[in-house]
Image (cartoon, rainbow, N blue to C red; front, side, top):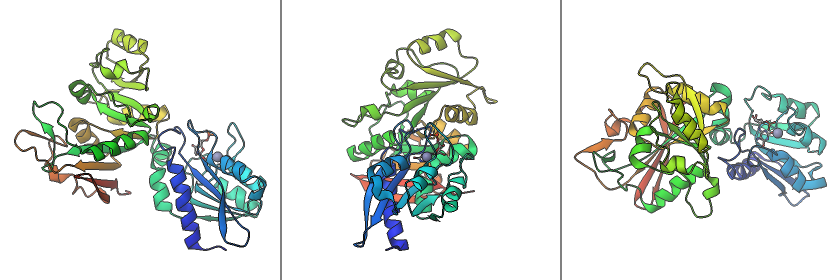
Length: 374
Ligand code: AOF
Ligand code: ZN
């Protein structure tokens, strides 16, 4: 039995399996694959796979291994076109062909120039039925980081901001104010685990002295790479970020003018230092910083502050996704706007984005916006 409705259901299952390793497969996308077989009573899942942490093995050989000999004549659902290039192991398209799969359903083509349609071609040439484009929009969102990195040499930039009902992220001189509900905070820690890297500006690093690790019980080992933009080399060696460089990777993006003695002291603590060009104002050039992080393999970054970095990224048109955690509390006089220099209501109305989410987490409302394809 074969129907577009069934294809969508099984692709939805493959997408949800693929999401399991989001944030830990870089430089590769976290792909999901399932194998189904119909022995007369309707199709049943006989194999599942998700790209392994670190990016290998790919999803398809894992799903095929679980299916075993039953893969012969079966249908495979893969969230991304199976690869056609020779890696440490053979191409996934060849593995599917050699396993005797009769039908392959994919969500989107792999834009990686090493693949770019050739995976589908290998399958079709072998006489396998190939259907593509099933739940393509969802898959393009899940694989946004991979697509962005391959096409533009930068990661998918996801901005998260916790703000008061009147659009402020804090109050002048008040230090860190607790804005998020506990439920929203758990959600943010979940975002950290599903993004490759988390990025903050030096202003936030100095004022909050954050650790930026994922502290959901049992998920500490899933902390993302932490990236600090520090143009002039101001992050102290005794900051929490540097002190925890042994627990979760810490990368400092700085300019070439930073004191070599400080660079050496950071490196001694296990920090990876990425020197990039400065822009006209002497700060780290944002496109150069994102390119440097992408060159290391990072496909997605979560920007968690502060207002200066957020504004600079928005002005440079480098934000792909925005998540606003809006608390019912008001801050009022002396409030620091979420985007320095912009009125609080200006951002959700930004025509460059479409709203794709609105949910309640405890007393907070979490709004999600996605960059329109331009
Ligand atoms: C697949 N299945 O599960 C993933 C794929 O460096 P390699 O050899 O591991 O290849 C990485 C590329 O393979 C990556 O850039 C992307 O194009 C594709 N990822 N392909 O068939 C998978 N993760
Ligand atoms: Zn592959």
